[in-house]
Image 1 (tube, rainbow, N blue to C red):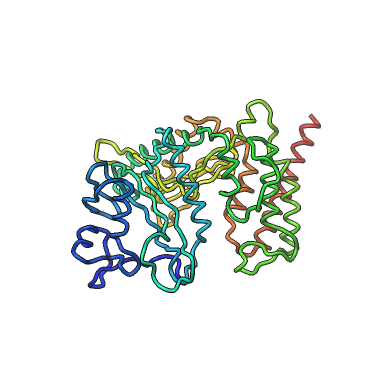
Image 2: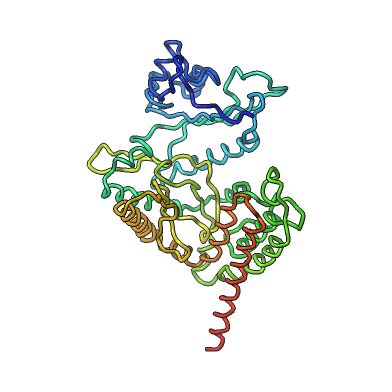
Length: 421
């Protein structure tokens, strides 16, 4: 089954290195010819941006005749290919609409440094049987951005330790600005359920709002959608797993815990339920970094396609470098995905990076730190639901249910102790 193109090769069979694409095309050598025609991409961009493509020196970086350089992002999968087995066209349309709306919102938020979107379109699936390789590229989603100065992940590896600390501090300022961004009316109502991770409820029978009541309903509906009734499918249908007695018992424990793990809305606590926009894959691989001057500078943040909307106390501080800079179960800076081959010096640098990143982040957004601390238990449950990949649901949810029972026991012990005082 086809879901995306393989890596392109040249006429001599060598792997294409991504360089001199326009030159190759004009000389009749087309690295992508087995899947699609580069000339179609060039003509579409020239028509939509009213320009001429003068060069494509690396990847899909476009030098244009009458405007700043651009970069194109064309999907590797075409919904019109025979036996296409990737994400459905409806899913892809929804995803690109969301991402385009986010870029539009970010135009007024220079501190977040989102890339500037110049043109986009969703894939179009042609009617009728798909029996031959498509002669157009309409089945591939396309986005074109103004190119920011600098490079992406490769720049990080050549930065000194001090400059890496500078970059994560800049990233923290950007992350704080995103946390403080006030979503416009209607945006969360339109997209929050749509952007939830699987398994998700088919609809909400309650209003989307920045309240504890909504957060309780959100958790309840998410657990109900994940663990239904004994014998029902759990996870992905292709896996063939069903809800068993352990998962069913865990469901009861998790539902019982929800109202006890979410703080009451008292005073400034209402801010911890404010709905916030998440990037979803925040890290150096989705940033451009200019290191040509005396100190490196983050010049853009791109690839918002995994973005979502959550109450503030569920917001994930995570930043990806070569490891993941996150927080532990107590809300303290940690390296949450470790390179086990790292030596002591590298491990020390990784620890310094997460401490610097979170120090600046919480200085810029002290309300973020408060939300994290208030949501310790809620975050554990939310991320456990998010990170499950369908494996051994009985054992996975048995352990999660045991955690919920132990958390309830600890909470009741604290309440009794306070009452005795």
